[in-house]
Amino acid sequence: MNTAAKTHPRILLTGAAGGLGQALRSRLHQNCDVLRLSDMVDLGAPLANEECVIADLAQASQVDAAVAGCQAIVHLGGISVEAPFEAIMQANILGVYHLYEAARRHGVKRVIFASSNHVVGFYRQGETITADHPPRPDSFYGVSKAFGEDLSRFYFDRWGIETACVRIGSSFPEPKDRRMLATWLSYEDLHRLVSACLSTPVLGHSIVFGMSNNAVTWWDNSRARHVGFVPADTSDVFRDAVFARTPTPDLSDPAALYQGGAFVRADPTQGKPT
Image (cartoon, rainbow, N blue to C red; front, side, top):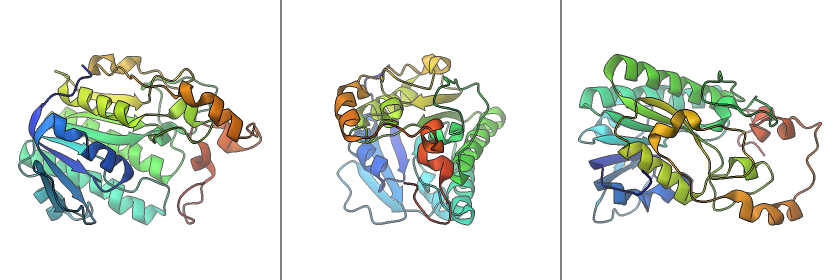
């Protein structure tokens, strides 16, 4: 189902200060009675149905306190770009372990894990893949998300914690370039997808590609039809404008050949890929 419904009394949204965290902060209140927000930075004054906590994912006790009393988790927290491995390890690898340990201790049985298309970034743009294709990470960041997918599967198989690993494409108000015509996920479709994952009766351990209803796509979501996500938006309405303002791709550039785009040639010592 795609309509938002109050599925849990209290939902934890990690990474609430980030771009996607802010987009979901204004929408997820439809899915719960209380929305608990966490991040490492000040989140501002909470609204009437919000709780705000400061939590460093690398600190187990802080994560445990953030999870206590919640019935579901939408985990957006961590580093969302390529970075040196030491930083990725603390935020994305140790952090996701702390999150699942807290979920296990507090009896949380449903997690929406923000994975990434960069788990499969070294597949070519001329290929169409499913969730059954093996990971081919394009970066330390992609490796960390592949780790999170494997860790969440272990916690499902061992302790029954259901997880949707949402391989988010490019979620912005509109596509920025030609690559994003294939990977774009609108904010409203992001919320529809998270709502579907929260409300589907049996989630299990599912890998779902986070994309809108784009005419061009590299990802086949058929393995996740049980989730019930039906995107309502499309990048196609932006196609003419994107083509007009961007050059023809240089096919000698790896970023134009592989699904991960600029991440496939990003230097982790230099920060965010361009």
